[in-house]
Length: 412
Picture (tube, helix red, strand yellow):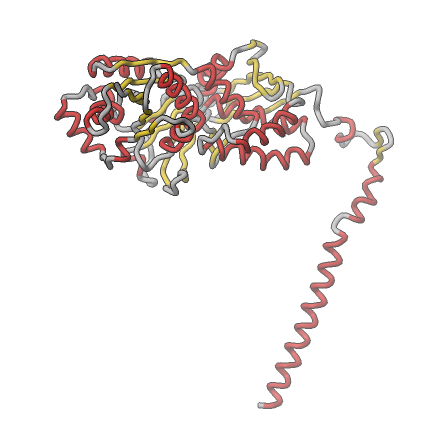
């Protein structure tokens, strides 16, 4: 008997994939795998109901802890893509690995997903799966299916897709972010209604301050209360979301080169990234901060591509691990007007001396204000020499042009 494990959500795409894998690909048995990375409970209910109606063998895997830990790893790398925190991109490899484990346990011959040929997720799933000897199928992409065709096919086969086909928007949710796309949102000139948001309220004039504690770059506590990664993220989503923190409306460049309009909510991610960067600013040297920008950008790019296990990432994390040894301390965040703004930070490893930086001190140890005079004299020295040389060249050209012009006039 041939078996294929399908990444299953219970929506239209994955529901039509079940009979297609049997009819078009010739598989005797299809099993569905749903992976929990923090979706709403109703999504699991929908998947269970749809699977039962299809007579589909269905597995649910809880990967919230693994995913939350990866999200906190992304904080250490200040991971964003084109200005927004990575969410879906981080979740897909975790989901793919969980599905692969079930497929191997259930002696499957192949893996399948319901992604189209236009998005990023097909690449992220298959980057994990193609490391194995199992066959990989993408019926929606390979058969060139459109949503209209799928709906007609589902009606013809009497497939249970009512629960997954309603609503105006295409929404993907995990504990780190919530993405909203599709329908009118595909028009960049369209102003989204506020009801697309569920995690974030409209900002008010109210403010609130919280203190986030970090150890080795990892957030570990809020207002003195230690929390595991899942609880910490869920707590900050609620607190920051109540102040309207973490909305992004962006034109995103996908891996295939397509430009798409995306809307995101990410209150906890925004809060933790802002706090972490503030603490790094206190404890890291100027050179470390400048170089880490390059490291963080490379880490973020590989994460966006779903290649978080690439050898390059291991090398990048060597630098990140070394710098994060001193990223221990606290940051006070003020929620105000839809922003999560660092207003205080403290660490025993600060690369900072208030006495040396203060305008109210004349001499600290062996350093005096007047010591900066020599530095000031040399600062910009080459620039001054170069500018004089340029002025000389410009002056010579002016003289030459004036002479040439005079000769031409004489000849005329």
